[in-house]
Image (cartoon, rainbow, N blue to C red; front, side, top):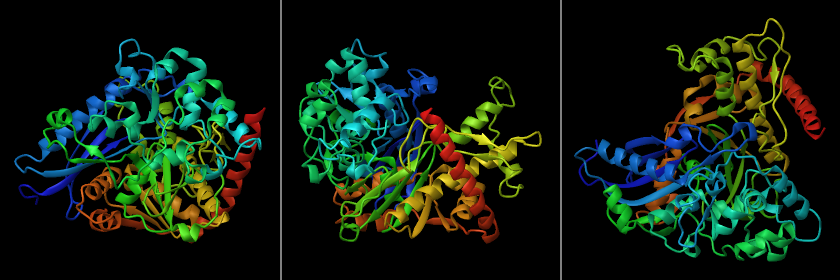
Length: 543
């Protein structure tokens, strides 16, 4: 039971649909209170066009929802007044947005409030495929250093420079009005700390290294010559956009008087440097060297850390990067993932319920589908699927590829197709693990976090069977926010380093899914079908 003035930190986790505020005990990581607030404009589908893979979020959504969530979490504490000593922030990414010279999000300015290009370009926005292709072509041309070296050798349309370049080419008014661009995870701390000069926004190494091609080997960002060769418009951004980056165990500044008043917190408490949700979620789960922590949500983000002296000059191709300090400050952080995971199942549910939106029976079908699918053998009734409904993130980013469902017949049922989709996501997970190990980075343990990992025993079990590995599911539903709170505790000086904070505050394992040897034998053969279908889809996307 919490007591008055228990020392706590506040973790803010900005997801795709909502923001979560979690108050966490610094002593032991207990989650004392939490609240969730959805983004109102996003919930109405504003500024998005799924047919074009355009997904934009209004920064006003973020600020309004953050305020509501923080107040809700504090209200849940009731008379127990927590002594909140720091705030940590994680967000989706790569989700860049333009700022004006005073550090204000452009969409909050008159004249830009309804322009999608002036908003946060969400991670799953794929309108920049052509720009990503141009970046890859230039990086691999031999005229410049290969700046994709530390991001798996392939730059994605989901990432920072591709999205900025797309706006530069297609919306000169927005582009010229922007003094700079920042990742969502860097913007929120700048808001909370009252930054009034865009040049003073603190850039986290997590976003800079994984999405913006920043690396110490290059003395920071790619050269101005590279930028202008890519497109002269990038020369108008001001070079370099930034030079310094920080790890998330450091403070980005103190909470401003304005936001302290809005929240009802003390002004001046440290706000930790921001990072992506998956990286902080891995810390919230107690990540260890060579364990792969999988944030299983709308997509998956997979994080692995390893000691720099053991990684040496090993480069893993086709992943989302390897960056010193991106998850744990003294480790190399590796990121991989799948562009759609939970989104695959949500899509199938929408297909089945397309005419039931106003029906009293329009509750989720997924629990019933899962129950029926669990009764089927591996492979169902012969259906096979490919999980690339939102393109492929890893291995080998390619947002032009599409999903496939094959083997359909008159005996196919909704549960058997649903099971095929589950198996497809598990095969995609296996491909990621195999890529790490083929390239010299062992995966010694697989950890699942997030709502899907905790709520869907079938998905976790199929993943265990497909990969022939134990899946360790973490207890907390709020690992990302908890990780943010752990970094906040370190930034506030409650612990000497992030290791001590992680050890004291991370969430324990809730349950373990062990692989079924007989099911694995079947899946070994079905995985070959998945690879053949994937090769066909890859060729189809080129035609």
